[in-house]
Amino acid sequence: MTPALQVAGLSVRYGATLALDGVALEVRSGEVVALVGANGAGKSSLLNALLGLVPHADAGLQLHGRRLDALATRQRIEAGLALSPEGRRVFPELNVEENLDLGDLGRDLALRAAQREGVYRWFPRLRERRLQRAGTLSGGEQQMLAIGRALMARPRVLMLDEPTLGLAPLVVQEIAAFVRHVCATGVSVLLAEQNAEMALGAADRAYVLQNGQVVMHGPAAEVAAHPDVRAAYLGL
Image 1 (cartoon, rainbow, N blue to C red):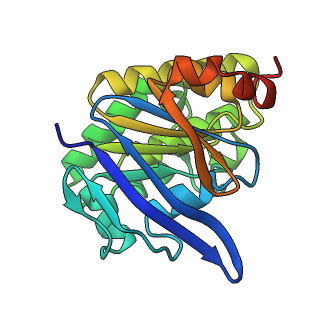
Image 2 (cartoon, helix red, strand yellow):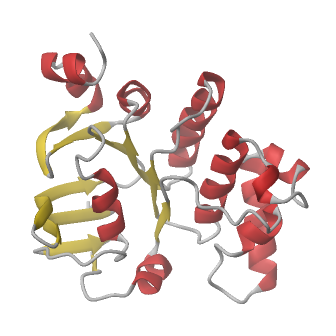
C-alpha cells in the first residue's frame, strides 16, 4: 500500500545552520505517527518544510503517491496536507467562525458550512463560542480552534505541531482522544510533541529527532520502552 506521506532525505538550512539533515519518514494511511524530540531538535522545521513554508532540499516528498517537491504551499494544502502550527496563531480579533472559515481554500459555501459543522461536532465548545472573538478564548479552546481551522481544508494528512503546549492535563487528554478519533475516520496524523508521554501513548509508530536527524524509529510502544527515550523524554 502506498504510504499517505513519504519523505526521503529532507534537509533544511537556516544560513550556516543545518536544522534538518537527511530526514526520512513515512506516515501510513489511517495511523498516528509521533515525532518526538527536545526543543530545537527540528520538529517544527520538519513540519514547516513539508508544507513548503521554509526552503528545503529533499530526495522525494510524496502525498498518497503524488510528488509535492515542486508545489507551493497552497497546492500542498489542496493536495491534502494541513498544519495546525505551534503557538496556535489564531486571529484574536476575529470570531471563532471567521477563524475557521480562513482554513477553507474553496469557494463552495455549502461545503464550507458542512465542514464547519464537522469541526463543531469534534469540538462542541467551539460551536458554543462561534461568535466569540478568538482572543478571549482559553488556551485550550484556542488550540481546538487552530486544529479546527486545519481540518477546514479537508486534509488527508493532518500535521499537529505541539498541540498540548501549555495546556492543563484535562485538555491534554481531550487532544489525545481527538487524535485517535480523527485517525479512525481515515485522516492520517503526524504529531510533533515535546510531551513524549502523550504523543507515544496516542501514536501507532514514532520517530525520535535529535539535532535534526532521526536517531530512532519504530512502533510507539517499543520506542517508549527504550531506555534512552525513557531517560531523556519520559523522566524514568
